[in-house]
Length: 269
Length: 198
Image (tube, helix red, strand yellow):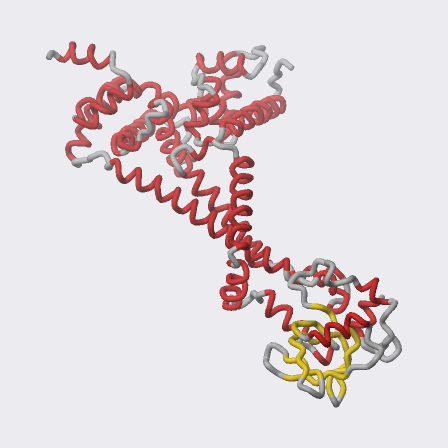
């Protein structure tokens, strides 16, 4: 049979196949449902992307960039330790998936990858900012982040690095018990603070006012000998309430006693 | 109504009208098959280079899938682009499974050769049979996507927008693929001693 004869028969063959196998066109709602599901999945992944952006944003804002010298030998090791890999990874993952789902909608393929990816990226950031405003970033990083084995939320991360009296680092809340100053850390452990007149004026102010602080000093038998008190400002950006260390250096008189305290020396370098 | 008058009446219907009628009664689907069977047959042959009996199997599958998905036809698209999309997907999936059964010379006929040579600026100083063989062999060496865009653009005469609907890629991507495909083809032909106009 030549190609022409085959062609002539094909209508009959196909109609016979349709009749014999009772083939019916899929219903309209099946197609609508598939299209709607892609939109729903796309919207869901944009929202999830926004959530991970707000978590990254919260994480980054709470890194004490200004104190990296106290905790790490150089900026690179600090950056490698404090990059929110999980949130950045998930953010990229959700952007890719949103693009995938959008592309699968009935006319999604018509739009350029760069344009669509840019819009999804922008939308995720805008919604992420809204989520941050609602405090979701903190909630996600603290609550969900803490349940993920290879991720440490920024609060835990900061605490693990700064609750290290042997290394000369402490963080927590200063209280005055009527006779002496103590610091209560996140484990509710109390540390007796040893203070001298050599502390700079801002450290004294912070000590007297109490509240959340970070301390650089030296652990000794009787307690924690304070070299420097740093305000807990919630994020690492310098502002009026946190005069930078250059301004304070000239007024810190503990250089000799604190010479052996590594974080102190590095911070004042 | 006699068969001839029905055929005449149906030939004046648009594709979309025939789709609506086919959904009411499958006998009208045969008019869509008649309208597209040759075009689709040629297109499948051009991108797969399969023999006629294999193409018939693919063609049958294409029309069954078209019938099954009639309700999914988006009326914003041309039916032609939509059925080509089904044919393209079916042909490519069949091609991937049966690559070893192809005969590259089936890719292009004499008419295609003329169009291809002029559209890709190939100098026709070779014997036409020899050129046809070399060209078919070279087109077959191109990647699936490059082969498809060249066939759709230069042989099927489709616009960027239609190719975009068939291959489900943005028109900008299609334009890039066409340029790259032409360059790739010329480079491969250069290596085989076939010159082209600059």
